[in-house]
Amino acid sequence: MSPLLKDTYNMTEPYSSFHIAGTLYRKGYYLVDGIYPERACFVKSLSCPNDRKRLKFKRAQEQARKNVERAFGALKNRWHILKYPASYMEEKKMSEVMYTCIILHNMILEDEGNAICEYNENEIVPPTQAFEVGSEEYMSRRVLVNGVEMHHVLRKDLTEHIWNVNHIDLNTEPVGDLEGQFSDEDVL
Image (cartoon, rainbow, N blue to C red; front, side, top):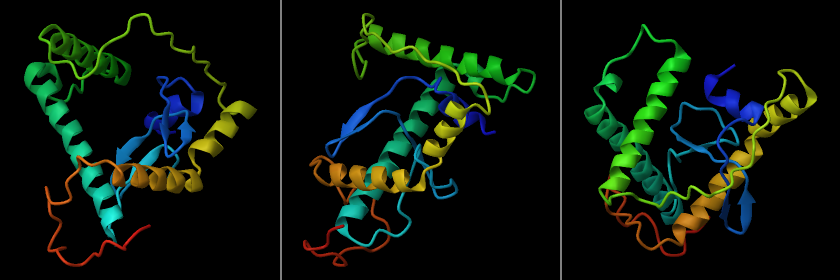
């Protein structure tokens, strides 16, 4: 079983919900590239966007992924323990070190007045409940997570949402020579 999906299957992942295109999504998602399978928890980029709306989605996702890569670069620069693979550490300990570095980094940003969002220490987070592997609840959760249809619905909703966001520029990172290939009538 993939360690990435283990918490999702067990419903022990951090609580995350959001509204997109009038739909409430109760779980977060990972931005991934083309090597990942189509799953409800993965949002893959479009390999060949064929209109301006899909191109904007692709560019927005590429920008977000680059921001994540930059964030991990900043963490590596600040916390040297993350620079080198810790082959002597077990997986659980490496995970704890990573979370500790992220939390410390965010605390420093907040202290310097550079936090992106405010922390609400009074926020009530719903408790998580681990399912026994092989139980009916666990298996139904796996079916939901592996749903290809939900992957496409979420990606379509995100594409629509991003299309309506004005601050994403299609020309910031051109992909080949796309000028003149799309008209304003091109839609999903």
